[in-house]
Image (cartoon, rainbow, N blue to C red; front, top):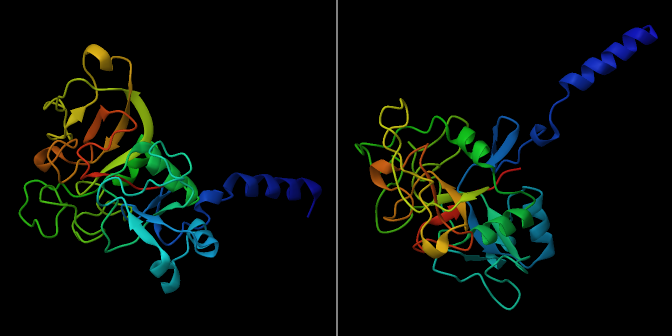
Length: 269
């Protein structure tokens, strides 16, 4: 082969080389464009064993001894803080986010705790755009003619991860609509007034759009975290017919855990 031909092959090979992020998504994640995103809503765990923590960072399933030694938190109020782990996320080096089925998802956390858990697990919070792309194709959950299998839009508590067979997106991510509302990486102006999508915009249904409003006293100028998908709980950014693929809420500051029953997340890489 001539030097010119070899150089051309090298250039072409460079142009079509697969993205390292997609060389192989961990089996706990699904491929969405150029992103790997958790297949299930994250559950929050305290893990102190270094070997077990290393397996989490590698995206590998935990063996029984690791599971037995881990403590699930984030499901009953602020039970994840201690002498090291602070509510602002500082010192929370033993918190990990697991994407596994048939567990209660984290549902009482704030942005900082979610970001720390994703970081410790070798991941990150998805951007708003990445979350949106991964959620596409989740079946419209309203009206609820099969509530046992459709997305969880109302009830006394969150349901187990992956338990709703008719709440799966095009890329295979479960529960991106309903169950717990999910933090994404983006911040924006704190919303001071709620509204719904303009009903004349095709495809947006009645999903809640709580993203803006006029300045209101002492909260003027504070950032708002962005949460997506709606949830099962009243007052948590869209439940029932207001939940959906396009539901978005920005009425809580980064340290807010809402009503402490439905604030969750999933990770990406």
